[in-house]
Image 1 (tube, rainbow, N blue to C red):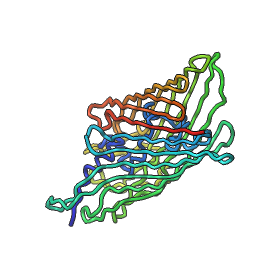
Image 2 (cartoon, rainbow, N blue to C red):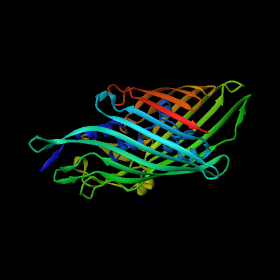
Image 3 (tube, rainbow, N blue to C red):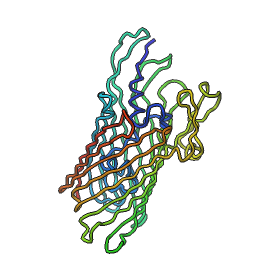
Image 4 (cartoon, rainbow, N blue to C red):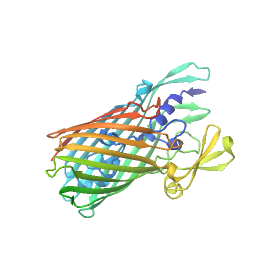
Length: 377
């Protein structure tokens, strides 16, 4: 019987999104779907559901595609979990295309490389090596209900190849699934504050609703990281000529996945994951989870994740960004400050973001994202 060394891959997957021992999302598969893909939103404290005005709206809020009439291509690259000095990287390729009378259609490919792993037998002898990776690809569409309100949806195929062979007598194979997004975005007409123009947006996105993923030949399945995200964005001019603008954005999100205890107590408890659809209605109450030998209870407020960000633009050509992101200590415990900058010249845009973790030795500390964008009329 063969044994696979999966601990490294599992560590990288879960610590990449949340703290390895405290992650609420640890009950889900493919948490790479929650990685914020563009440097702009990442530089603003992981906010973007109410902005969604470029190609990365496919991730933040596909309803934002409805208000876009440019064709765009954007790619983001990040060396993932730099504190581990491992061969991990994250790539996100996205593009949009505007069709007169129909609206804007977008497509994306997301890839997370988890590096090379070693396959061994029960005596620890090497039997070879294999690569672990996860990817998804899909299409999104946004359409206007009127000049101020739009709806959006998205569909993605998900493939997760963590290992192969046998572990504990169970056959391991890649898992796959599909996810659907449902979104809405509201934008006010421009209004004045004094002699300064302003606009207010509000957005909602329910992402990755779909069937659970199965990696083994056992009946146990892992749910998708279904996330509900709501937020607002307030943009106003700092001068009467409109050369200097400031945006204040706030996002609140929640993982809509839940394990339900079916038998036993404490360390001997047996849990079963709810379906993605069932969890939409039954994941609003308190959440009990085991952390080591301790059982903690998270109320609804503890389960929420908060992001807030600022973005300053000069003449729509140069941007400075900052933000703050917070999670409860038993719900991921990510607490960090973000910094970012952006440049626009003709059809080319470049964005940069940097993550400064407030927790010592956090796996995400010093994460840098770089994005390149091309926009065509």
